[in-house]
Image (cartoon, rainbow, N blue to C red; front, side):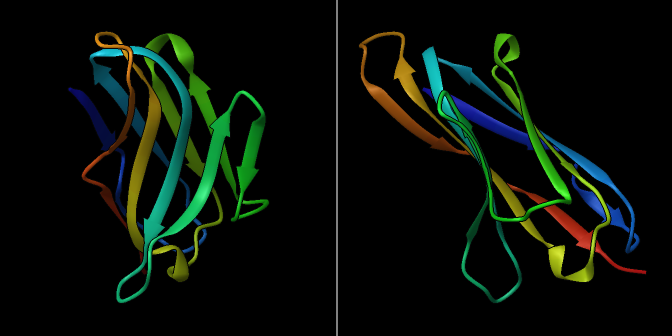
Length: 118
């Protein structure tokens, strides 16, 4: 089994910053894709940022930064200049290959709530 756990969510004022962390653990041989998505209240889940061997992609440009610590199987999402519309449940996705058997996994975390409000 592969577990994905997010942390770092909370309540922040408009204009503030927050850093989310996501760690994948368990039966992992390798990870080749990690991403952050979010689901605002009453809306569909949307991809925020992803990172793999080909590079980094953002749907929220200029304010969010994704980074990865491969040794720790951890990905971070630094969020600056937060707005009320950034309020959402932020979830992490990890994809890769299991240790044994060498099959692919696609695992999601439970999500962490980010609320931007004064």
